[in-house]
Image (cartoon, rainbow, N blue to C red; front, side):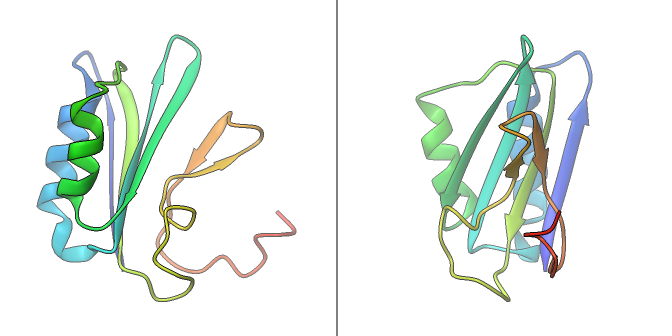
Length: 109
């Protein structure tokens, strides 16, 4: 199970995404992360544990951007690690992906 929230708009996305994750925390509390798009660049921050642990990591590094995606995870497969936390990176950092479920053929795609 997981919670996914996205934002595209005129405001800074980071606080909106964090608030969305807090509202979805009951959907997953093993890890959380977010990715933000700004100046043709994607920044990603992930943390193991509850959303407040992610918020503490972000407190010292407010990331600009008005578009992003965030995810909170309840692990059913794979360990509870930062590597397994979403969003996942693909295409040399040009694509961030958050999903709910198991992608069996992830190596092929």
